[in-house]
Length: 98
Image (cartoon, rainbow, N blue to C red; front, side):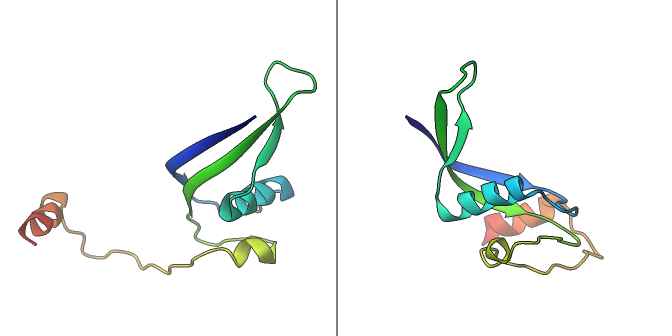
């Protein structure tokens, strides 16, 4: 029997170092809607299948992903440093007005 996790926002922050092949596989599975198989806890041979249903976010200053199939599934956004930050109250105030 598989377990399904839905509507989560999963963030891997500062993923700047090389990631293992197993970690790359899990990220690719999450991006394509596949399942992850693991040994069921407290058993010797039972298998549990997990289907990740989440919005996956990876932040990195210098990404070092090796696999082309993982990189091809990413939406890349270049951002710049905020030089003149505005307060939260100002931001939320403009949201309420508009």
